[in-house]
Image (tube, rainbow, N blue to C red):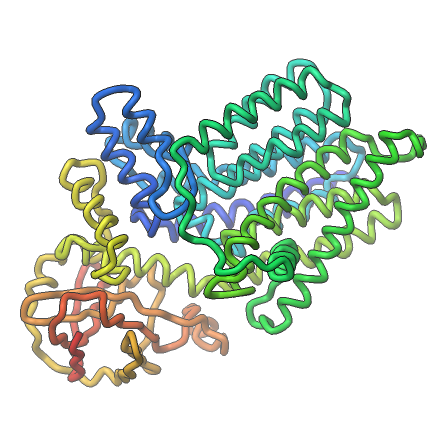
Length: 561
């Protein structure tokens, strides 16, 4: 009875992080494309609708992204299918389907886990690792959800199918390898570990086929290839190695202790590298029959883990090469979209540790991993919540701005890339490919746009000028839950109206949460970029939408942009 209760409790505890993740992402995802989503997906669907032949359509899906080396036909086709099925290109639906990849990864790890006689309680760290907010860009940025998550799933699926030898598995492994190659550029790293597995297993016929498939895929991928302009200013092996190790251990980066991040991440990164090296040496010993013990882990298990770790390390190395010496230095190694590689490596390191230990030591491994993963899971929501709210609010404000200015007003207006993004979306809306979402202020958009500046109030706003922006601050206004009450900064001139998001901060004192269930402090801080708006003199105000009513209060502050 005790074992049964522990099993049921473990199942309940394991489901909780998954359900909360689904609820949270559902609440904060919005049907607005962000950054590269416009040129990856909106442009592809618009152009496919205009294409005159299958060959032309194929070229559109296979087209290289405008500013990077990536070709993303799989996600472009998925976006087009959503458009054909639903009648609109819906980025909310697109993101939710992309996030389902995490369920696939969880199932793959569960299949691996069930091959061993471990109690289900040992599986609990895995859902707490996968379904967290440390990788929040991947959850809300549609392109990331369809690029980083699927690569992890399909690369590991390929290695799983090859490691556990069955003749019919090879065909599916080969298809999986082809599929992941055309998800994103890092997908092509699947072939090197796959060939190592086949070489290890002495499956030379299958190895030859896999090499030929790799050659064909890479030839197609690099046809009409243009090198990315985003390259490091100088090749530096120490920088690449430093960034590489940092990325491997990025999962343990704690934002409020960020000065310690290089040390903690490096330590964990070196541990992961140590496990990878140990696995490689173990496989070589096994291959040359130096060791043969009945108590050793199964070769297929080690093959799967080592191959998966190699592929993830190759991706981490590629990012370290292209990003570490860039504008943000080591900070870029902790970007949430890249952090998923570290999360998967932690999952693999944990399963590897279970394989290598027994009885009491295995319980010690669980006792270390479970509290760490649970604490960092909860902390990830706490530390990233204000960012996720701000992300949603600025996309919501962008829909208002696009309606009246044919621009998202998220980037400098004199930038050529910005112009490409806006032109694509103008055409998408005009042709019915995409439709701006309905939001709390949508019924009042016209009257807000035509509203005249009147009833000047003392909003206790402070304005600080910097080189490229103004910073608008307030420390007294109550900023409520954005899912219930919509609030925006409003810039109003005689000719133009813009909405800007509030950049709220989480309530560190807990006072407002305990008394009013408000997770934010009073006050906000908003950036007003100088080269983003149509030049004019603007009055600064505050828009509030609540209970299907709106209210605008203007301050006595003006800003000339």
